[in-house]
Length: 198
Image 1 (tube, rainbow, N blue to C red):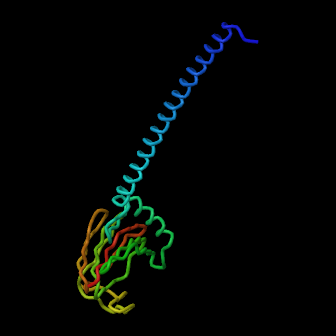
Image 2 (image 1 turned 30 degrees about the horizontal axis):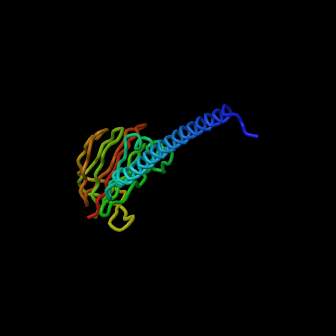
Image 3 (image 1 turned 180 degrees about the horizontal axis):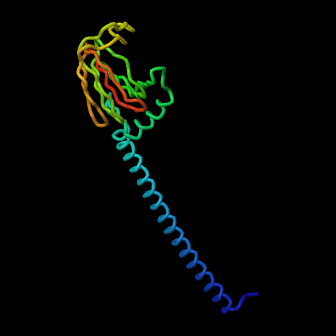
């Protein structure tokens, strides 16, 4: 038995509507997928750019010139506090900080006078960090004892010059020059030293 014309029209209308909706859905979906893909491509490109930039910038940040070294004031103060807990019988302590070919750096801390010193092959450069002392430099070293090749300690200095030094001062002491640091009772003296080998 055949259906009525009205029912066929209704079915056809529904099919057309469903087809149109399906096409709209597919179009929206394709557009969303396209937009998502575009966003992902942009994100991936940005990530790649950041990685390339990072690899380009990092070497400039991380790579320090060979032989370069920086000590902040805070670093030196912290090291001085540590040294103050490691004083020897002469109330002296030092820490070798770095080696640089023909010279090296150390931080020294005193809470008592030092003995006379003589270095046959090393120049001393003092940078006074804190405190004050009297430096005896020059003259003749008498009755000192050899403690290592080219190194003499002890005895007395005759005819040396006295120089008051304090925080901020810089002193250059040539090799083969007797020298001694004298401190007042209860005083503390911290200094950065560059020792240059000849």
